[in-house]
Image (cartoon, rainbow, N blue to C red; front, side, top):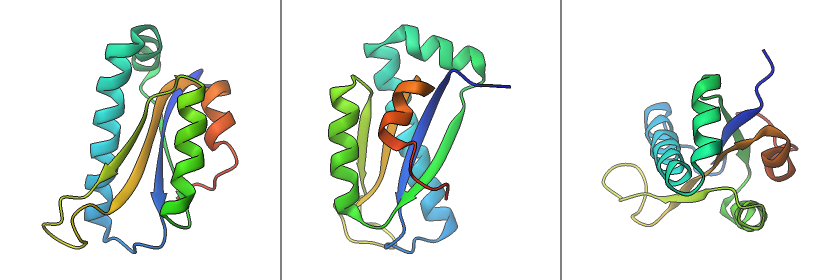
Length: 119
């Protein structure tokens, strides 16, 4: 099935998070982006949900790679949510761990994250 809508979560390779910690951070971003899109662009949210709520998890090298992606997403009116860790477990408080994007039409969100490798 070709999905017309998707959400993308961008992770940082340099943090070396445990699988459980990474999963929690990805989940935080997915929930935040879904709520934001439901509130601000219910058409995109509803179409994404009806299609099965596709999500892709991709990677970048470091935190500096998040900022141009976030800026481009915001220019395209895509929800962009940067998750900062609370610092209770593996990493210091305030560490930016993942960037959530979307959900949005695949052809639009790919302008932001389409060149990034899957995790």
